Amino acid sequence: MFESLPASAPDKILALNAAYREDPRSHKLDLGVGIYKDESGNTPIMRSVQTAQNRLLTEQKTKAYLGLDGDRIFNHLITQTALGEDYDTDRVRTMQTPGGSGALRILADVLSTARAHAGNRTDATIWVSDPTWANHAPILKAGGLTIKTYPYFDTKTGLVRFNAMMECLKKAPEGDIILLHGCCHNPTGANLTLEQWIELSKVLVSRNLFPFVDIAYQGFGDGLEEDVAGLRYLISQVPEMTIALSCSKNFGVYCDRVGAAIILSRNSAQASLAGSLMKSTARQNYSMPPNHGAATVRMILEDQELKTGWQQELESMRTRMLDLRTALTRALRLHSNSDQFDFLATQRGMFSRLPLSPDQIDWLRSEYGIYIIGDGRINIAGLPDNGPDGGLDKLALHIVNALNINIDR
Ligand code: LMR
Image (cartoon, rainbow, N blue to C red):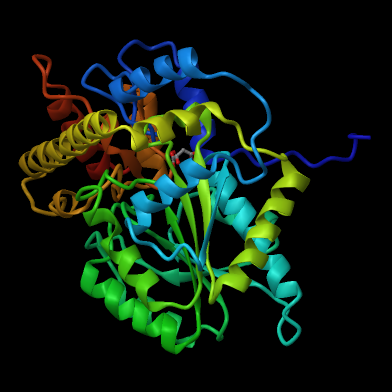
């Protein structure tokens, strides 16, 4: 059966994570996979999540199946968190999914199926930013979409190439799907301003392009509400769109797999058709989503005291990442005697990209046990504090040294 199988290409983020775990050195540093870490390098369960799941264990009466669309109260509350209290329930359908990745895949399946029935045009092309999260293309392609890229990031300045992005999107064929990062762009940390979201919305509407927003880091950038200002503006302008949402990071429930697929349709009848298609797509894949993590999130969002506690914890995680950004920028400025890294301080979210070559990244790993994704992406939350051993300062020095050497192989 399997003798002719070609080897599967490993995912670069997860492969690096596996290599890090196998590295026996005690002074290794993981700046790879996107998980939040505290001052001690741990990823503890958030206090609000711990309280909610303890309560869940005592209060839960059954483990009977959920429906195909999961827990409807969770769906409503999480949709409110992203879209606002008064989102249009007539035109919106939400389905609980196994993580944000599950939402991406379900929505890709739904869009390619919908397009296959469209009659006039059956191909489904999605434009993703260059660069984008390493697993976007594999998931979306597996869901039947054809991938194209639009320019997004200027590696020299660390800024968004907004004009180039707009020029490209203005030429995209009508009806094409445009994938956007709701906030905290992964891997670059370079985000659209609200003014740019407004300009982008005009192009999407006038060119009849279909927005697909992936929002996995709400609350990690400028704040819970601030991070969705662009998305909320967009949704107020367009007739239809899809959103893949993840609770992995902002509730720290990575392994519980909690996410949501959200569809905004032109009217209630189309929303019901799209909602049914989401459910049958899930039924053909994994049937029903796991409950524990979503039930925990629901409990937090339903209980004002837990919700306030969660918001405060999230805010302290966000400000810790901001402080680390500022400290790294300062240390790099000092060691490089230049302002070439100042863009790091203006970026937001869990990631930024350093202008390191693959050889320089390999050198940092083999010499110092510093693990950075091959495209230069670093996890800001993984940066060490500048404790007594000057961890952050040493790291900045190693990075500057790596950039200054010509590695000869
Ligand atoms: C990341 O980008 O590192 C995270 O979203 C984890 C993952 O699954 O890749």
